[in-house]
Length: 407
Ligand SMILES: [Zn+2]
Image (cartoon, rainbow, N blue to C red; front, side):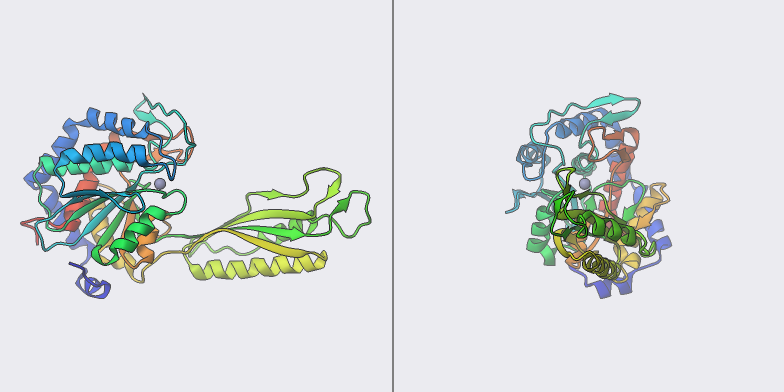
């Protein structure tokens, strides 16, 4: 059942009503059974989480990890398990009918180099391993969620679709392919990636550039001017950092890399620097880009040089008008509150959720546990809160897909 955004908005109730509804849901015997099952299986959940983490899965090389997960899914009596053309692993737990289709996504890939031997260690209530958090904690949360739902014999009205995606860390090929091929069949899309206490309901736009000043170059002792291309570079960077970068809408600007001549005794003929520009507003990004271009052109002209700009990557801000007050966002807030969180709800997500939003699908991103040091070898997660995070995913899935006996 696909509800149009406008119709859905008309039916949206105040958060307080969803809190009452979720509260009633959370006290049902079957939900208690699911939670007890999670609590009885802390050790096996941790072992499985570690086992999956130790299968390194660099973007584009997710198959060994996917195969392992497929092997687990095959034991769960699901209605459909298959791979799509991008290599995403998809598992469907069919509902009884009459409910929305809810997609849960966790990405399989990690940022670590092929061949890295990963060995997790547990100490002081934390588990340490590269990739343990991003995004293996959420992969494991989905597996544990399916087992808990099965153990409690919970039959949702709507289908729950579990998508283990490829290439989130690089090209978003996995989510883009999945959304493209299933657009009209998805009611709500939950990307589990990062997060614990709160969630995001919109995606931040991220544009990366490499700007070059191109000049004649020359030996240190050659006539000056012309100067080294590092001069307009320095002037431009100084001016770019004087631009006003708004905090509302949330925006950031960073110049992180630069380079010039390869040797000390030459004027740079090509001096370059990178710009990482982010905002939840595409208008802000466009405006800052225009101002940066003016600075580059002026400083190039002043030094008698030219500008060349390479686009490293661009990804637009993803938002749906009125989404903050949508059914999904209010229900997600209710679920977080019933779980005892005071959830930060932000519009600056940067993950698979953006691809769903850009396709017009109501989507949030959240996660199943607090972790630290993502994309580093020192990555770690707290263990105890993870079990609560899994319960949150169970409750979110049941609340969204609906269950018999609840209006
Ligand atoms: Zn991630």
